Image (cartoon, rainbow, N blue to C red):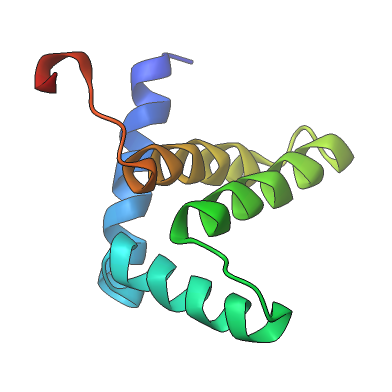
Length: 92
């Protein structure tokens, strides 16, 4: 399996889910607001991405062959990077 194919599949999944659920930032802001209310403390959109990635890590630990957990984990890591506000080397 070529790693580029995996990244292409992860990218395609973002497009499919984006069409169903809306943009990353808005969706994670909404999840953070709901989580903050439930926990009675501030949860950031970045925190939500890290938590969701952690769920995928736990699922992969239980079943390393579950393909979707690997792909979703890649996407949640990418979302965490976006939501962190970090800039890539070309933007510095």
